[in-house]
Image 1 (cartoon, one colour):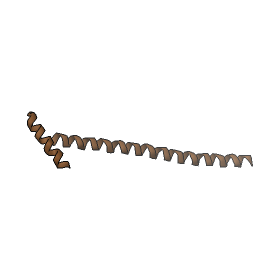
Image 2: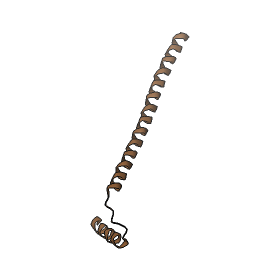
Image 3: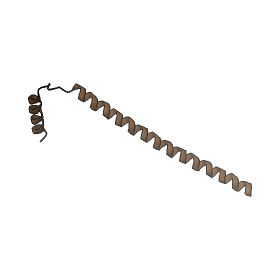
Image 4: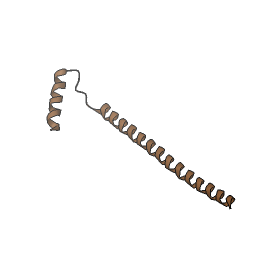
Length: 74
């Protein structure tokens, strides 16, 4: 009787351990996916920054550009 009870307890423990391992593995995978998505967003932003037209070293031209950009966003 006690041997059978120990066997059931061991089986239940294994099932609980398997479920816990699956749950923790899923959380780790989700965190890794979120990190990859964040880094891809950074790469895309950096590429857009590198491809942007540069106004030049003239502060007046830069001011005009920013004024036009500010009006465009409204």
